[in-house]
Image 1: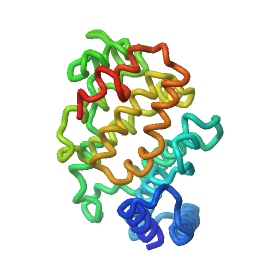
Image 2: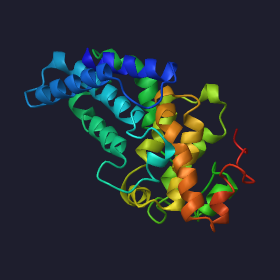
Image 3: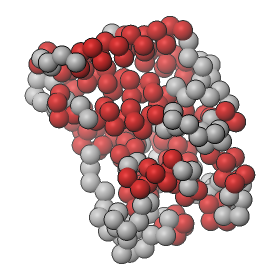
Image 4: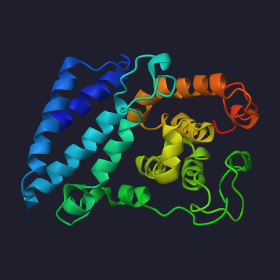
Length: 257
C-alpha cells in the first residue's frame, strides 16, 4: 500500500511538472514501504507474500529511478563530483531482479502473470555477433564491426539494446523494450559508465532521449540527467567529434526524432 501511494504521488509530481523535489508525503510512504519490505525479507516467504513482495520491489525500483536528488543539471550526475550514490537506480534494479526466482511473478497464480509479454521483452536475448540493427555512425563511435561480440567490446550489448528503440515511433516504445538497456548495465560497461566514459555516457544519453518520451518515470530523471550528460561531454570531451555529432547542434542530433 505504501509503495503504491508513493508511486502515485511521484506520478502526480510528473503530471504537475513540479520538478524533481519529492514531497514529504511521498518520502514518508517510500520510507514505510522500504522498511516493511526489509522486514518481510528477513522472514520465511509464504505464497501469499510473493505478489506483494514483487510489487513493492518493482515500485521501489521506479521510485529510485524517478527521484534524482538533483534539481538542476549542474547538481546532477555526471556533472557533480562522484560519490557512492552514483547510479543508485542501477543497484535498485538489480536488487529487484534478484528476487525474480524467489517470487516468480510468472507463476500461474500470480497477479503479474498478465505481464508475461512485458517480461518476455525485458528478457529477450540480444544479438551475439555483429552490428545488424545498429546505426552505422553509432557502431563506429563504439568501435563495433561485423565480428564484434559482448566478450570483446564492452559497448556491444548497450549499443544493441538502445538501437532497438531508436528507430521506433514513440507510441510503440514499451517498458519491456526500455528495460533491455537497463539490463545491459553490468560488467565492464557499468564500470565505464561509472567512470564517465564518453561513449558509455552517449549511449545512456541516447536511451534517455528516446525512452523519456514514452515512459513517465524515465522522464523525471532525464529532465536533469540528460542535459547534465550533454554539458559534461561538451566540457570535458569537446574534442571528441564523433560523440558531439549526436548531441544538440550536431549533424546526427535529430536523426532519430
